[in-house]
Length: 584
Image 1: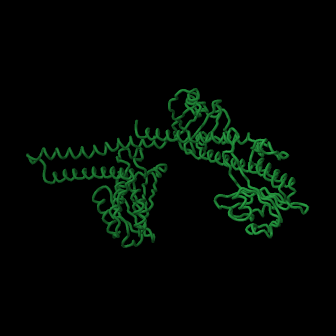
Image 2: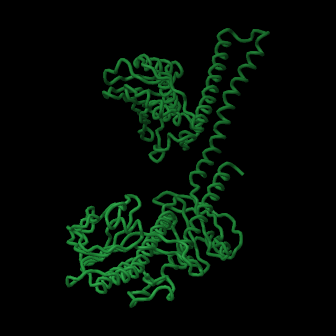
Image 3: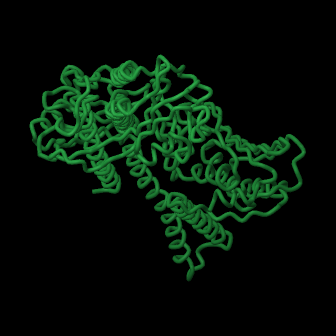
């Protein structure tokens, strides 16, 4: 098993674990929703023998949706106002984050825009006292009652009223109270016909408060469940890996955006029979085997997405609940296009590297053996020996460059950047040197420096790395100009930046390869360059040295048959601290 397969296996196991967690969350949410939808709102939870029942107040209404629950609560508030003959009914809910009791809709006899102003800290006012103590309070002269100073009773024209706590009680299977939570308070303001509230009104309001509290609690839970369910669906939808869930009946239960993109489907596929949607023969056989409970062999599906061919590995598993009941068959589509391309590039690289290593070694051994044969007999002249030794040295340099490229690539791939050495150095002498060296290295090419503007005398950067950038680009230009010709090094002063270009008159690069030439191991294979060998690492290293070490940008322009130009731009005054942080 290779590293790519191991990585995909780990990814698959991670995805299955995520899916199992999401499935359990979904089951919990479905259970909560079913419980809520079957639970009557407004039904007093205490046994009949403990509490005398008033006339039923909108009880027994199922929560079919949040809107229905809101309507139920609004009708209940109106009914309370009628029974108590109150001008205003206001519900206040405790907000944990702010520590305040806040008026919430619906209200009776009070414009909802005024509710935003009706709030008080839970440590203040009549509202706060009732919330803290859990006991009702009747007040007869609100404007002059010292307890209402923190409450805006004058704004809503309150004269008298009753305030009772909103309490939620949880009971066990034997109907015993196991938990009591106060979630807010309920106000009835201004008894009609100039009358005042009495103890009987308090008892009635307390009973109705239990209905109000139950509705609010259920609505909150319902909203929370819907939010959790929405988050769950969004999690499925945002997975970059394609996901398909098929029910035991053969219908599509879930299909996220990535999977729909693969098969060019719209969002309305949920609930449809999968065999009417998916027609790939391999995939059909895979899903049939999976739904039948058989271990299906892994398959690969190749599809065209936005004009690009992508390959997906298909993996699947039976989904069961805690009781072992089959809930369906989940299928994951993992994009392995890059792994396949990388494997191809690695295979190509191994072949190229083998040739690159073998060629100089063959030359070194051949000329060394020739020299040894002639040592005793003085067969070769001094000039011949110098020529042979020069070839040996040149081939050794070629081997060293190859090994350096491999080591540098390994450092970059492992996250260890090439350690830069930033200094202020003279730019023009560096350009003159790299041009002179390349002119000595090739007799078929002439390397020409063209400075289009007066360059800055010095710049800040890594002089050795910039030398390596030019050397690699010039080597590349000479290599891909097998017929010889001029190679130009262009330099432009752009003020805060300097731009350089290395232009050849070689075979050029096809347009569809321009964006890929800086990828590791990438080489253009065609009739013109089939005899030009290389590792495909030089431009990859150059891109790293420009972008990571010098915080610049690099790009290529080319016309097939006429040549290529590699251009890059770097700052004159590199921010060394930022650059070091980028390379740390």
